Length: 239
Image (spheres, rainbow, N blue to C red):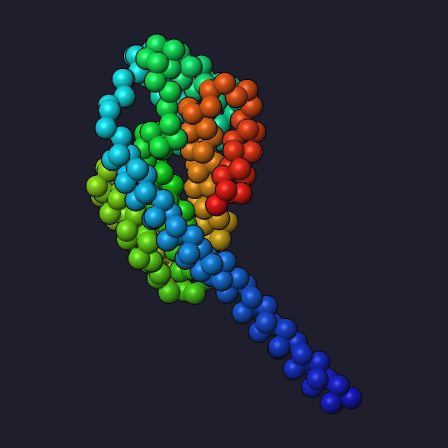
């Protein structure tokens, strides 16, 4: 009987140990698998600039009305998923622009236009990844990729220095389960895993919006935003 109890106790301790190891390392393992993807994001951002440098002619500007309509969509693009109505506005504006100027946008030109937004996505996604690793390992983790994306954010003035400083400090707070402080000095409860996954989820929404927006700019005759998924699959098959 004592032996049976001992075996049960040993098994219980082992299972608890396995559970704790799994819960603390799961997020980090998932996050660490993104290392190669982050390298590809850096290459993609550099390639956008390299390719756009080959464009010798300057594109005609949008009219005030066209720019105003696009700005409404771009403002929403940063905060929530774009819907078909939003994409229809982009298509209508781009169709009008192309008819007026006789110049359709190439994907390179469209991506150059959205370059700063691509930087914001890459930074926010990598920030979420660093939060997750720091939270799970209880040790602050700042990747070389995040430092690189931060420099891009600074050079393109995508965010204030105080905001970026607060983000980096919050990595320490996430590791130590401490109260977070934003760039204005406002205090918030310590980051939870749900909070961190929300940061990553919001970044993924932004990336999806960018792809849809660019596809609408370059394929304004397409009637469905689902076509962007087909477009991406075709590109994936061509790699």
